[in-house]
Image (tube, rainbow, N blue to C red; front, side):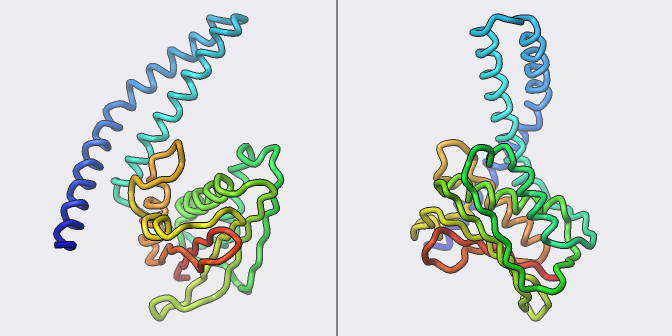
Length: 231
């Protein structure tokens, strides 16, 4: 019965995914046209502060809708990796830099604890930046100032192959039992805004690398998410 229920949920999610992916594709042109009109309207209203504020709010809503569609498309689309050799530290540092605006005005300590002599892996750099950006963004959203985020990595064996284990830990409230169980479920989120697809997409990307994305050890402080990638 449980297996049948899981299969039924999977079928429903697949149907929803296909439907929304089609909707996102068809809506892209309409979104682009409305964004162009809003940008032109922004120039027209000029010094009218109240009208300009309304236009900017509409543009932000437009950007959120576009991001929603892109995340859904990213979840249902096949993942084709463009692999090359790169040092893993470059991927999480690039992700951290891309969050400069979100970090602005906050008290944050970002630590690295590297126990590997060589961090080079054969991976899709762009995709891994996407993974680490999601993990770091979640940590920033969960933790209150002063925020402490630590990335620790070490060499391990994964499926009998040489791999690198990268753990991202923060000093936020951590994950409760339900969150630990459901964190990688599509459309599950504890945020007031968001699709609940970020972690599901990140897990798919890591799995495409024949690696593993998992919840780390439970214990204070905060939450730990572990990325394991074969070299």
